[in-house]
Image (cartoon, rainbow, N blue to C red; front, top):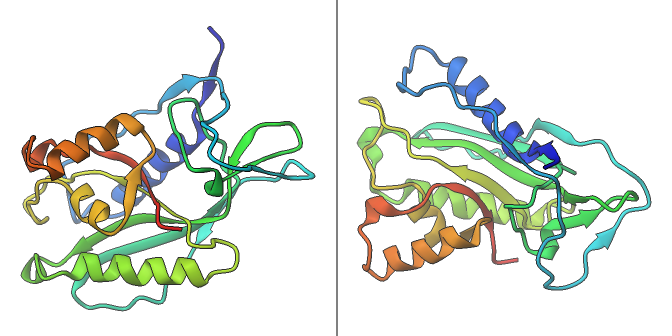
Length: 210
């Protein structure tokens, strides 16, 4: 079977490794994340019209200054990303997608939430939710991002971090959904109380209310 690097996941994992390794004084006790290989790109589910670009753009990754200053936050890191390739097991709405001149699917410009953590003394006070709501407004007012935000929900277990069932619960509450539809079905069961909160999935999520 032909294989192709899942560039979106690889970029996310590379950034996570770089972010965590640059903060060795805050040892989260995480193993190095593995590079992933997925099937060759295939068309996504149809839900509208996917914009077709007249060229084959270069992928863009650069720091995005959200200008969110809240001393209750321990960390907040955001990036501006555009034209990442996507792979067969990741499904985004058409408003997140474009197709280059070669016919390959790419992600439109978006804000990528690289990392967010609340100081322990301010835990469970709505700080994360408030920050997400601010970031959503910033993305909606950005002419390039047009409300698009992507993140990778990952639970980090460390004595220096707040012990929560899953960060995806807060993201879901603010309108984020999983790019893997099977994870959305599991999360719906968690929300209904059919599964415990610690069974909430982890993975790539996008802001859906645009």
